[in-house]
Structure formats: C-alpha cells, structure tokens
Length: 246
Image (cartoon, rainbow, N blue to C red; front, side, top):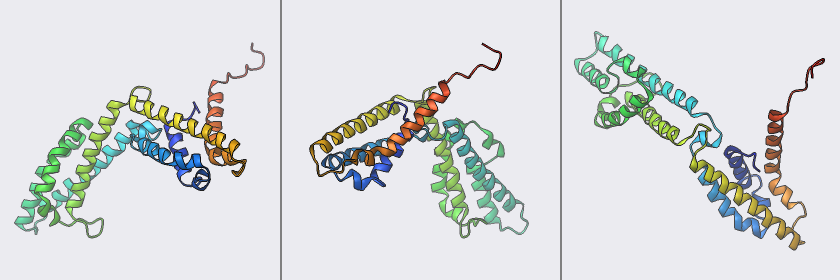
C-alpha cells in the first residue's frame, strides 16, 4: 500500500464505512476494527485538504481571496450607489458611510496581501457584531431577502478563511506533506494492514465465513493500489530509443 496517499486512504475508509459495511461486519474481526477505522477516518478528515491530496494550498488561497475581494467590491459599490443617490435619506447615507469605513474604506484595501487581509478579518468581525442592526437595515439585490449583513458576513468569513489557509500552509513542507500528515498516513496504513491480516486469520479458522470475504472487503483498496502502481511504473519507465538511435 506504499503508493496510496492520504486522499486514497480516505476513500478506502469511507468505502469500508458505506458500500462495504455489510461485508465488514460479517466477521468478528470486522466488528472489532469498525470503530477503530471510523476513528482513523475522522483523523484523516480533520487534516487540511491539501494534506489529503486535495486542491493545492496555492489554489485554495487564490479561490478564497477571490471570494473575499468579490464580496468586498460588492459592499463598496453598493455603499457608493447609496451615497450618490440624490433621494436617499440622510440616515441611510450615514449608515452606508459607516459600513464603508468599517469594511472597505477604499478599493485598494482589497489588493493587500493575503496576510494583511487575514489580519484585518478579526477587526472586521468586531464591526460585523457592533453594526449588525445597521447592516440588516440595508437590503441587497441578491439573494432574495438578504441584507448587507449577509454580504458583510461572507466578506469577514472569507478573510478568516485566508487566515486558516495561511496557517495550514505553514504546516506543509515543500513536498506537500507535514509531520501530522505523515503520522496519520502511517497510522492508517498500519491499521488497515493489521485488520487485513487478522481478517485472513479469522477466515482460515472459521469455515462459516465466505471464502472470498477478504476480497469483498479489500477489493476497492486493491483497485486503488493497482492504479497507483501503474501510474508509478509509467513515470519511471524509460522511453524507447527512436529508430537509428542507441
């Protein structure tokens, strides 16, 4: 199983807990290991996506920054419209100006670094709470029934998301792995190996169990492993020399 990454192992654990659950629980070994497998799945799920073979952190940061800046621009331009509207009541203009000052005083603030935007999110969380009634008094065109509070909440949450992703990036090495991820992967491989060996022993000792139970429980894992081995072999295979070369 050395070619399986954490993303593969998570798929295996999910598969054992769902599609193969009936076969898993046919044996006494499966019943014993089911709780341990569920606990291990939770540990893998708790790791950042990039550590499980998901989207690279750089892509996640870019996507989260786009979300943050998009809501920020929407807040800026909506308050700009209210401030320019000749028929807007003075109280509404005052609220719009207060919201702008608190969240997006200038569009240039949305071009700050990820770290600066993340740091500002905690300050804006306070403004979100203190200006809740004011924000909820200003409607927005989408989604239906929403208020400026919804946009401001999404804006602040995206900034906090940047902070979390930056923290995750600090844990990931140049190879995309981290000490916690390596530890969880090793523990998962060990657990699956012990489970399989114990299941094989029980099948040999208990003639009442289906003879193909091991395959029924582990065929998905074996399929993923075969695919990874083929991919690894293709990467290391040397190209054939062209005609006339060599």
